[in-house]
Image (cartoon, rainbow, N blue to C red; front, side, top):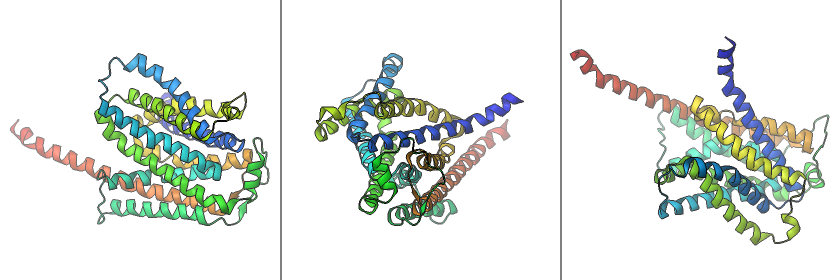
Length: 355
C-alpha cells in the first residue's frame, strides 16, 4: 500500500523539485548579476558548462546510432540555437539585471500562452471561437497581456516582510528594493523579459519541425548547447574584453554558472522528460506558478527585494491566463481523443458483427 502511495506522489514531488531548481536559478543568476558579473559572459559559461555535461553522453551513447547530419539540418539547428537559446538567454540576462528574480519567475507563467499564440500564427494550432475551449485560450492570451501590463506599469504599495535576512544582498539590490532607478529601467526590463520568453516560445514551436530533419533528441540537444556556446562566446567577447570580468573565482559567480549548467540543464532536462512521460505536458505546465511563489518568498528573505503590490497582482493575473490557456488546450485534446476513439469503434464495428 505504501509503494502504491509513493508511486502516486512521485510526479508531484518531482514537480516541486523542478520548480525549486528553477527558483535557485533565478536567485543565483540575479545575485551574480547584481554582484557585477557580465550577463553575456554568464550565458557563455552556462552554455559551455551544459555542453561539457551533455556532449560526452551524446557522443558515447547516441552518436554512432544516430542518422547522418545533413548540411541543411545543421543550418536549421544553428539558426534555432542562435535565436532560441543564445539571443533569448542574453536578453533574459539583461532583463533580469533591470528587474528582479520574482519578476522573471512571474513572466515565465505567460510562456505557454505565448507558445500557443506563436503556434497559431504558424498554423500549428487552431482556435474554434464558437467553442468554450477556443474562447478560453483567447481569453488566456488577453489575460496574460493584462498581467504583463500590470507588472510593467503599476507598482503600487510595497509589501515588506517583518524579517529580512539579506544573506546575499548587494548594494545594487538594496537600491532597487527601495525604488532607486525603478521607473527608468523597470518597464524596459519587463518588455525585454517578454521578448526573451517570446523567442523561447518560438524555439519550442520550431523544434518539432527541425527534429523531423534530425530526429535524435539527445544529439539534437547537445549540438544546440555546443553551437550556442560558440555563439555566446562571440557575443560576450564583442561586449566585454576586460580579463578580470572573465575570471570566476570561488564565489557566487562559479556557483551560479555550475548550478545553471549542470543542475538546471542536466537534472531538469531528465526530470521534465520523466514527468511528461508519466503525466503529460499539461501536468508539467500546471506547476509553473510554484516557481513564482518560491522565488518571491526566497528573494524577499535572502536578497532583501521589496515586493510591490503590482508585481504580486500581475503575477496572479498571469497565472490566471496560464490556466485559461491550459484548460482550453486540455479540453480540445480530450475532444480529439474522444473523436478518434469513436472513429476506431465505428471502423471496427462491421468486423465485429461479421465475426
